[in-house]
Image 1 (cartoon, helix red, strand yellow):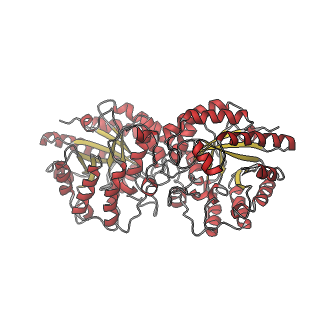
Image 2 (cartoon, rainbow over the protein chains, first blue to last red):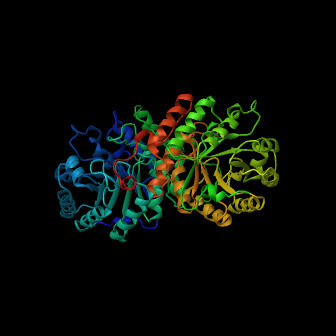
Image 3 (cartoon, rainbow over the protein chains, first blue to last red):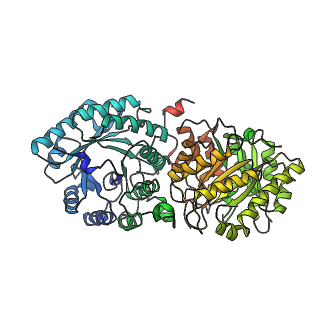
Length: 317
Length: 317
């Protein structure tokens, strides 16, 4: 039904823009729909092709994602671009299947504590929802792939340490349940590069060739790019980032958020991976987001310092 | 005469605090001597042992280093601590040898353009000064080791790309001239992890067992910690950092400076290297520096977000 490798070719580095979803989760003010479309459009023009655009949740509870259907339709109109959105329950799933969404994102917590506190369900109930999602997708004859993100995979704000074996068992269960891609997320920024390398390698082995592995990192404690570099070294070819590092953590007020998309692209290029992204051109999208969210802290070193002049890996392009 | 391995044991990770030198190079206002001593004292109490404390330059030209002798004497009074300071000409060298300095730092530019523009001498004249420094040290019967830093080793703001072979030739020349330790510096933050890994491995091979290799990184384009992680993976066991990321770059106004010392320590610990540093205790030194330099941008993720709670590599200590 679905071919996740068409979306994420194994021979190139794909960067997913999650700023419109994870980046807007906690903002005080969010952009108007037209401005979100302009943001996506500017990033698309810069070469970005993967956009996580929201979550199927009641708009009265989460107003920043009320326009998720508009964004999905817009992305569908951009040739080669792909949309992803969260469907965290059966209602959301049914809604998602009414749209031309490319990726249905399910979330499974790595720890029982976080699963109960955050989703009010057990981890096995979350895995069961993955299975329902894949089946409903098949029944509907929908093209979407099922992308399962395992949150708190590197440490949990509630349970503390997370055993690698627990995460790997969940990876296996999610694959058996029908996940097309697996994401491992350092939701609260606890990971270090050694841990990222180890879990990435082990999870990638379980995923095999058919199931792309996505690494989702936060820069809460400054190691976001060091961890991303370690993930790339360990074979990961799909990483998430958010424009301007949006997405601060509710458990660490004032802390930095998702890995900065611009800097992540710079990292990948510096390591010799062609991302297809014109890093300088991302400034336009950033300007839109900054204008729409004046109260948010936008971070990122490339935005401050600019690209280096005249160095090898840029000259080579 | 000197044993650089006593200063930098091969079997552990040593982090050098360069904030009192590189971090103060361009500040608008610098701390009073008593406050610099309090800063060193607070870091010493947190486990830091290596302090680069200034430069032997005319105080009327560079007033922030006028108290370099006081700082060297203070460090000498802290058991197990080591001081380093720059001596960039024969006059500075003669002055340095009058003090109980532990490391005389010489600087050689990787490119002829930068050498002429910054030091008004050729690269070979800079290497000749290394030889003079080692000889004068021997004649004086002084205990100091000669630490040669190669600036612009990963890219040059004037010449652009820097060939690895050029840097390695300079490393060989400096070792032949009597350097005890070699530093490779990403002075303007052009490096990426792949380049850092390659040059670190190659330079470490030339340095062999007797000559510790130091990697000095700036976070100008956000890759400071990713590069540090790559350097550690490539075998580097001595890295520089500056408290609060002091040391912005004159060529990139508003850009971030040296790798943040606190975050560098966190990175090293997360990778399983015991640094001997109590990261939380560094906050005291930071408070002193922030109070004394209200106009400077202090950065660092650990200072914002705190250490992660209850994760493996901290529980293990």
